[in-house]
Image: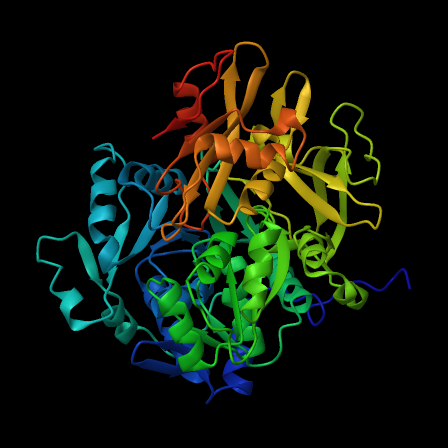
Length: 556
């Protein structure tokens, strides 16, 4: 046996690009993409991706070059998830809601050679290029238009070399796509959301993305040919790998340029949607419409990104959504744990079921290990559901590392064999993980560690509260105390006062955890994926100054 070694026949690099080839064969005449009046089949999508890859190569893009995309959930965005890697390049999706200065910094940091720009993001990208130093190389630009009106926005003075559909027409549909030389070759460059710090460039390889996609399909028990509604931005960790997963299952991608609750419900009814993903903010959106009728057919929804309050899970499931809770980071590409459901839990009361489902759960089928370790000792914490520690991971689909940041890579993926997430959690006696906070969001008040997530969960049980976030505010005596930023439901008649919110919390938690400051706002600052920007709220709380011995709630 020792003489047996890998050969060309059994050492083919893993890559999710092969999903598309199979989809064209197995599901060739079946719908692949639906967008407004557009319906395409998997054969058409395969052909268009090959044409796009050919055209990209003809522009001088070579293996390892970075190609950026600034676009919402439209067909071109989906196609470029295959076309860019098939040209041998590295795909870099950029958040369309960032400001021009940040987009400029990301393009320069990534050394982007080519940028595909949706017509609505054209002003954003042109502004971003204006921040480039005169001597810095500027990427080529291609404009994406999806209707006749949008094409008139471009002028002869624009620095675009052409339009996406025109580029495809010049491409070869028989293009021999450029396969990775090694499955460890980079396939995507994703930037973190920067909710706690400056965005970092996360590099994933073909192998990791393949495993992450297969892992996500298995963990969600995704059937063949699901009807998937794109409410999760594809620019967020490649849609948690379901951009590739839909090709593996021959699913239908229902694309939405923008959405609200009414648009989502209309799309579910029109297309018989079976699956969708979204952050807890989407669950809150769907369950907060007055007099909403339950769905005729259940819709499976995978949520993650931040711990969902149990009360929101309960409301959403009462409307006919079947919620699966997963946990992952940009560095994991897709979900790395999920709250694997046990049938016996169905016999629990509704509130208990929601609390169980709010946990992040156990490692997924392709995860190697998940643990919570004490930061001081480096040992596993007690499995008692209360001992706090940092969540650490091992998995074959973790990132290669951070672009141009060897120190950050070494710090997060050290020599001890663990990836350090920076998330604080507990391990329950049944081996299920529960996140309590980001390490930077734990409030240390008078020596007591306060989980902002726990305080937020109580706030969400108040029927008048629509959204809530808790951060630390400086305090002269305690060092820091909880400061709650609260959005009330617009249609709520008897709006609670600051003191009433505090009294509500006092009845449901230890007094040291009760917010000492309550700030009412019309809305909370969020990233494009629905994560509340706590760093912005911390700045607001800090600007309020140290709280005094006699504390008064405030209103902004």
